[in-house]
Length: 396
Ligand SMILES: *Cc1c(COP(=O)(O)O)cnc(C)c1O
Image (tube, rainbow, N blue to C red):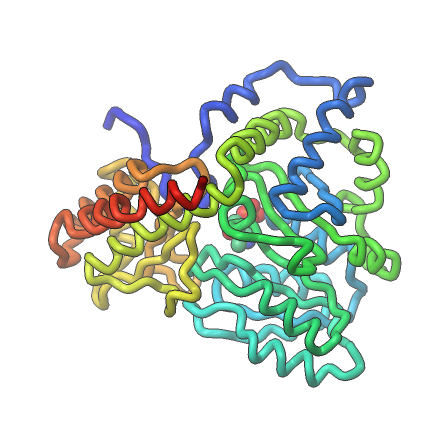
């Protein structure tokens, strides 16, 4: 059908025109004498999104998965222990990566739809008297189930027990979209990628690394080359890279950071909360359930919606795509066929969310899921008109 294709997956997200235009440039010499004039301010501005002044930011060609790998390969040694929790496909995959690197992985299995189990982290860390646990992993926003976890809560536990473990956070689908505070929360590595909150094409792993982590790197014995933080730090200090950087994407990143800055980071967060509230209101009005089991887990960047017993969520996704040109996120692994996901992060406004909700209604009706047509869209409209003014006040 003619017209825009709707992209309502939780990454890649919609790309702003400013970002597209910024990347429509001739390729550049990354060893040119004026290249640092571009790179040094860029790195400083990325730090603002992570809310770090003391940490270092490194940008690798890659994706979020590469960011995970960089954290492990730089900081850990074979056989060392990490504490993590698994409650969705992404938290599962990072634990799996640690296993493949030969680490001892204590992965607390949680019900999908819940998040980081603070009490159980506390128990494990309290029992770890001789500090065998070298790193604690947290998936801040589990994109498979639409669950946000309490990173600050994990920091409080570590501090309360005076436990020296590194705090490694997967912020791929949260950083730049929902509250994240690298320095305040004492995060040692924060991992992100380009194609979610940063509104860029896939192709960059963006990580922020604390001084404590850079110190810990000195004792690590895992081999690392492409993702070596030391090589990056040495070259970045002069405004260069140890190998060819993805300069075109960095031009896009410059535009994306400018957009975030002109809106204001806190307003970006408020907008995500506002838009997510509309989606959650729609889910309630359809009489369906959010995969995230409690409001404290509700993600402002993605919502996973459980279809009623007897229906296949993949039919909704397929119909939305084939008949209405709307991409929805699929259920991954354990929740395959049980949920479809609406991504609501990045370059997005109320109208775009209503479009996605309208597409979901068309597809659900075709598939035979019972609900009152317009109920979800109407609930979102009510939510938006009720909270738009509050959001504007909060932004000022
Ligand atoms: C998307 C995502 C990843 C993986 O990132 P890629 O860019 O696909 O490698 C990891 N963690 C979370 C939470 C994600 O949403």
